[in-house]
Image 1 (cartoon, each protein chain N blue to C red):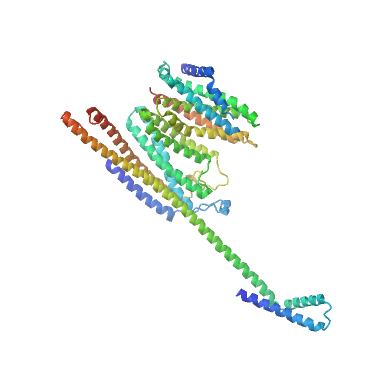
Image 2 (cartoon, rainbow over the protein chains, first blue to last red):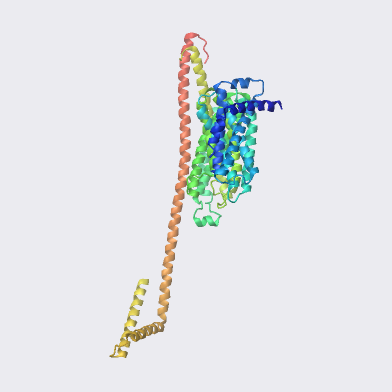
Length: 207
Length: 243
Length: 143
């Protein structure tokens, strides 16, 4: 429980800075523009930009070391970063989804339950996998090139699953079986990588 | 014994491959589509099915290599013994080569079956992604500087976890109703293959195992040599021979 | 064979027709007032003559059968050609796949080999240098 409290504190720290600057939210919302594809492009961009920002800020001021040296488990730092990124991605999705539905007149909210689930699972996946590698690459000089090289192949399955599920819901003849199949896929993918991340984070991030 | 391992395995692989080539072309039956519609379209695979034997032989040990590399990365992170890291990096290098063969033969197969070289279909996309992860691993090793081994280990472990998603879940969600079993590049082949084809297939899988292990060992040796060179260089710097 | 039969039947038809025409003309005599009646009569006579000869019908049927057989043979030849091209195409694909496999394997082996040789050379060189340097500095240089 203490772990979660510490994680919440790290997350809150990031989100408060974000609320003060609002920079990311604006940038990310800008990308909200056709329906399942657009929604997921927005989520993907929100995720990568959000991640970059969350970790770049720490590097610019060299505060990551302070964060890692803080008397909390490293896991708390990881979870905090992941939660903050998830919340940011979800914020963008909350802005983008109604806008997309309204602008393009799409029945995006025909099945609110699966839609919310799929977006949340997508956001969590991006944040978790992203946080692990953004943190390990923090000190590497060619980070800006290597992060997408590492991250995209691992994240594309999430986007494929997310887009497949969303388009199954939005289609003229919705196929709920397919939608749920991909939600299941996302759930298993996320939980596998969450467990793995929690397990390897500490041995990967060494200052 | 250690010196003999690589040539011995290579010879075994060569013999196995020669025999399996014989079995593939002279023993295994020709593939006839069991799907009447496909036969009418003339898109039955016939002779093309012979691609499968070597495609599968490589794919098998592509996954094997990814698992070896993932598991030895875990061992490396736990023990910090660089020997494990050598194995992981060697195995990933071999996996990149095997992956290239799998993607290439798969693409030729797609051309024969679908008349397109590539289709953005979930299973193929995911196979490409797995290969990209491996290539990413190699790039990280080259360019990530001093902490490359840790980051690369992380990638190897994540890559290992991606494999089941690529070949189990995606395959189930996307069956192509118009395709006959075993003919579709995006479907599982091994379970659906006819009994006459099995000896050739398994022999080719076995010979590629020998080939994989031979490559792995020689690649590990070269990594060891690299490490030795690095140590010698350090000593050279210490002694002032190098500057 | 069939051409001959065809020619023969045409000759037969022409002969019969001209015979009937000659007969009609002779029968009609001088007044050529109503050619339609003459033509009709000629046609009738021709038909009757054709029907009277039982082999004629058999000829026609035989010719039709032979033509159909020819068409079938051509179709079979076309199908064989098609299948031949198909298999040619197949072979090409299998060759592509195998060539690709060998190229990748050869490239990888060459890559490994060259790397190993370069490393070996460099290690040997460094060793020699180090040994020389160690010999200068302190006699107990381990390598």
